[in-house]
Image 1: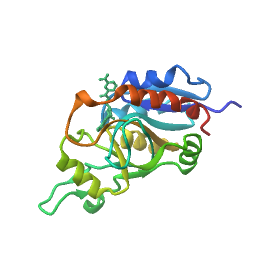
Image 2: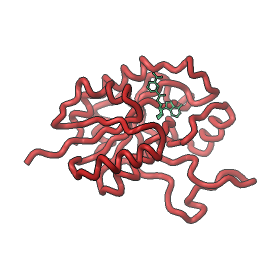
Image 3: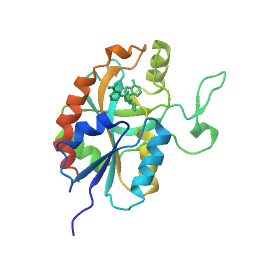
Image 4: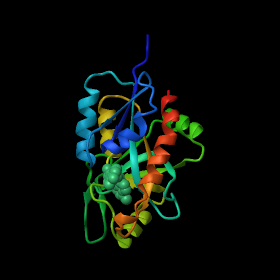
Length: 210
Ligand SMILES: O=C(O)c1cccc(C(=O)CC[C@H]2O[C@@H](n3cnc4c(=O)[nH]cnc43)[C@H](O)[C@@H]2O)c1
């Protein structure tokens, strides 16, 4: 029997197009479902309802934490973390773990992480944060880097895709190409071409995932 394909979930069409040209449709299918964790979770759950996928990958561009993931690099998530899921308090941010409402982190599937790391040895392993708001100040970047010393990158969808994959009982991973540093907003400086080139170059590795 032929195995079902891997589902690759991106936010926007330009990210999906970076993969689509060289994907083997028997091995992997890519779909763009929208920007942010809610669109990612709802769109992924809708696609998984067919029951015709073997695993799920959240993929696209991201901000890289300075000194941890430079522009143009690839990051493989060890965990995807909903970094803004919780409550503010005068003493600092309280994650939902401390509020008693479950977990704000989902581990990536170890088999997928190992296969990605072997196929993409230049990629940086680390935690990837999911935020509904793109970081745009040095203060927020510093605060996140301190709260999450193992975070290499931030994006807006990974945790949402992970929740949908977990609900469907499927293995999950996240792969990001860094288009910009996490820090003061400078949209004109985003190096989209470098990030898309890194995504395109990763496509053969995705065809080969278990
Ligand atoms: O303007 C364009 O041509 C363009 C082409 C493709 C994608 C975009 C996006 O803006 C996609 C938004 C997408 O990017 C992720 N992302 C990238 N950098 C960051 C960041 O520093 N912090 C959080 N998210 C980031 C995110 O996952 C969005 O879905 C534009």
